[in-house]
Amino acid sequence: MRRGKIILAILAGTSLVAGCGQTSASGSKTLTIAYWAFGPRGKSYAAWFNQVKPAFEKQHPGVTIVLEPIAAAENDFYTKLDLMMKSPSTAPDVVTEDTFLINADASAGLIQPLNSYVSSWKNWSQFEPAAKQAVTNKVGNIYGVPYDSDSRGLWYNVNLFKKAGLPVPWHPHNWNDIIAAATTLKAKDPGVIPFWSYVGKATGEATTMQDFEMLLYGTGNSLYDSSTNKWIVSSPGFLSSLQFIQNVYSHGLGPQLSQILNGQANNTETTQLMPEQKIGIALDVNVITANWLPQGPAPWPSATKTYDLTAMPTENGQSPGYTSMSGGFALSMSAHTKNKDLAWQFIQMATSEKNMRTIDIGLSGLPTRTDVIADPSYANAPGQVFKQATSFLQYTHYRPANAQYPEVSTAIQTAVESVATGSLSPQQAMAQYAQSVTRMVGASGVEHQ
Image (cartoon, rainbow, N blue to C red; front, top):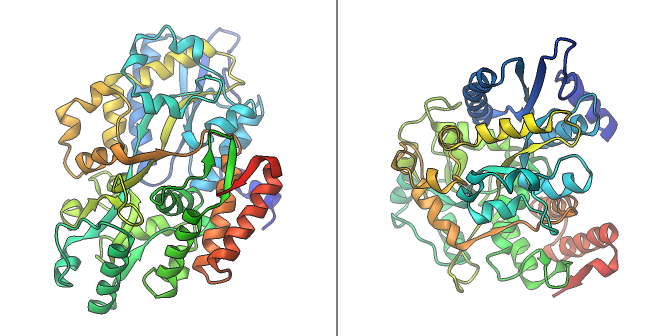
């Protein structure tokens, strides 16, 4: 389907808001909040904003909060939100913004810098420095208030491991340990998918961050050289990462391509295959527990007793031994809002300690406020893996804070899918990636290591 048709299809499936910051003749105002309404995240957002809405309207007589849920898979959500924010007639006042898009959307003039607001906000000191960095561009402008973060590791099925004679608890020390465990699972139980990881273009950023970058940053190499401000388009670690993916899929250790190369792969994994105990090991994010909470799409009280989360080792077990990737979301203000002060007051209320506790437990995310982190009711919340996920933060990495990152990420997804499907060798896929990124940023913007 051509891009134009895709956009029309997305727009046809969702009503557009009537524009941000509307003021009636009587002086009443509406403030529109657009958010991602897909899977368990959508339910948690609805609970969060419906908790904030009456309190805000009571505190601001004459103001009506209009919630604008965007029910779409991940990539379609980004496309729809981008289209809405480009026009003053459709732009919401406040949006839930994935932090990997912060720099690109800021460069495009879609979101408003918040420096003047946070500088006089006493609660800003409660936010974790790493979370603040994720919403700050290279020149120090702040484009959102972060409300959740995450980390990634290896989910493994305790029952399947015991049945296969594998150690429990499991703590792999290098990539060979992962392949060895997956090979044993395949031999002992052919009906199980030994190793699940995202490898398709349809799963978008999940393929880049949850699979490829979890491998790459465990090799000692990275995507971007901040000392030279250049993209690293070839490196031993880049090649090793693609070779790991080739090893998994060429030896039948991964899922069927029909299961993994579509936009519903995440739902298939978390609401069907894992509850059915059909996956031995999954490389994924901690927040998938939101699917199994009582309010989630697949309630499963014993989920975190059946699947445990362990740290992802570095390629050869080299220091620091483990690796992870972290991202998150922020509340950002549209550049087109006509009620900046009101929008900022809404963001402040939504990210108060009380309201942040609601959204972080509901999303299964890692808090960005230190007072929420210190709250025992959060740390000991049932059905979660907060302690394990938080322990990974000492090894974690963040995606490059660069406006070109979304395009580079798309090139990575193409390389990964081509290797998983066998259409290109790892060497060919890395060469194709190097050509694609060089076309995007120019020869002076890349380097080879």
